[in-house]
Amino acid sequence: MLAVWFSMLLPGNNPENTRPPRKFLGLFSRKERWRLSGRGWLAAVTLGLAAFFLLFTGIHPFLAVTDRVNADSLVMEGWVHLFAAKTAAAEFKSAGYNQILVTGEPVFGSGKYEKDSNTDAWVGADLLIRAGLPGEVLIRIPRRQVDQNRTFGSALELKKWIREHHKPVHAVNIVTEDAHARRTRLLFQAALGTDIQVGVIAAPNPDYDPRHWWRYSEGVREVVGETIAYLYAKFLFWTAQEEVET
Image (cartoon, rainbow, N blue to C red; front, side, top):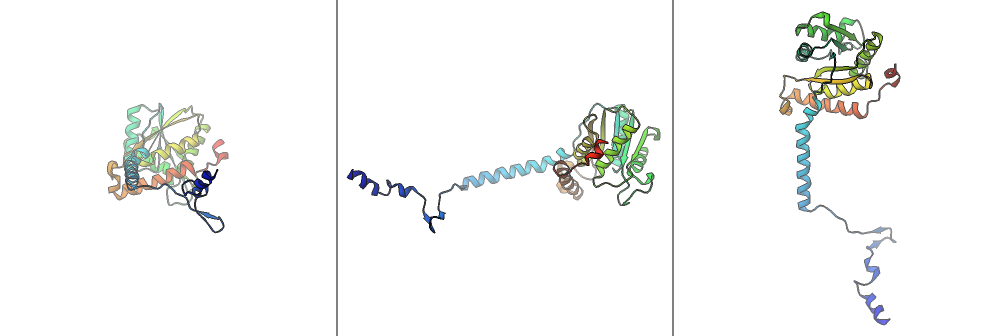
């Protein structure tokens, strides 16, 4: 019994010594913690740089996606530039579509609707004619108001037109510009619903090399802006449910 008592007096055997030090009436205690070693920091920095490199080089292909579906109707966003209209014209001629639908709101900077000829639907149709398409295959679908999200508003107008004209449209391919493609597909699918399958065709922007987009001011504006816009559309954008259902 005496031996046990003496053994408890030894620092290594006293249960009190296994408790972390405490101060200020036991309100604070000190404990050991794990932290990164020099090798651990090196590994973490290496993994971080690798992830950043993959994101840096992979973000443009992610945004500028081309993913066609089996469709007989082609759609082009009317706000695009001539290079995208040429892509749409070539797609229409080569794939045997029945019609090409051009969507668009009042031209940027108008602030409000004035007349159909001052909408992107009309401007985009003129670009397609310049690109070699005959006017009779073009169907202009203007959105006669300015929405907070112009792409989504144009998609809602397309859905309204399909319903009003009783067109049996089950799938569409949409031509748009470059890094805007993934966001376009997301918003058109949200507006058109599950009854219409949505594919997308990204027209490459000739003003910069997509493999080295960070070397061009146009590429930086396009990729950075579309990355932010896509994240907003994906996670923060709430559709007007009553308008989608009508």
